[in-house]
Length: 287
Ligand code: NAP
Image (cartoon, rainbow, N blue to C red):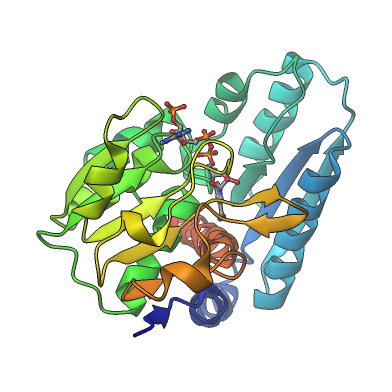
């Protein structure tokens, strides 16, 4: 029997509806939440992502500031712009669209963002707070996945979770969030042995490899009734795909996310949520 689709578009909308109400409350207190985006260079995919983030902000009443910078900008010039945004009281969230051109170091750049405006949850300060269960601003994709579990009333306590990804953006923050919910988390990667065996014994599989030539999660690799969260987005044979084929996996899984329309929309919704959280934090500081 086919399982249930975890619909990222519907869940993201429920997050946006709540954010919209919070924005109204903040505006009544004289605070207009504002997200500043920084896009370096002319990567068309990055430009589309930034455009979509602006559109989503507009939908919920969050103001935006758009910084389009030349491909050849130096590290010190970029740092100067981040410092200006850090000091600008009308800006509550700063988002630097990644990847950056070669001459710019991602760690140096993202680390420069004030932790209070770090709506991507990527600064060492916020990553450390997450590890200590004290984070207010958490990376958007992992927190979006947690929101999906919440929405479907999935209790993670004692669940065996196989997490296939150990990146700073996805796997590492997600590991902490899942552990906080008392799940048993096995973090897998390209050097993991017997991945199929590990997947077959998992209650929940969260996969984010993003390269069909390296890894595909097929129905024979999951146990009957498992939950599958497919974070990956890649182009394969002219199609946008995840690590699994939703139509096949859902025949065996109890719940699963499609690609597209699964985790993707959650990431943008959580960015809006983080911007409102950052604006609220700024309101607390001003008091
Ligand atoms: P990444 O840094 O390249 O991470 C890929 C992970 O997959 C790494 O941990 C890598 O292991 C692991 N891996 C590679 N080959 C493997 C194999 N054969 N078996 C098991 N694990 C393997 O990429 P990322 O930034 O985390 O993104 C991952 C995917 O998620 C991409 O498709 C990206 O587009 C997608 N994504 C989607 C969203 C969204 O909003 N839906 C957000 C973020 C990312 P090693 O660490 O050993 O290399």
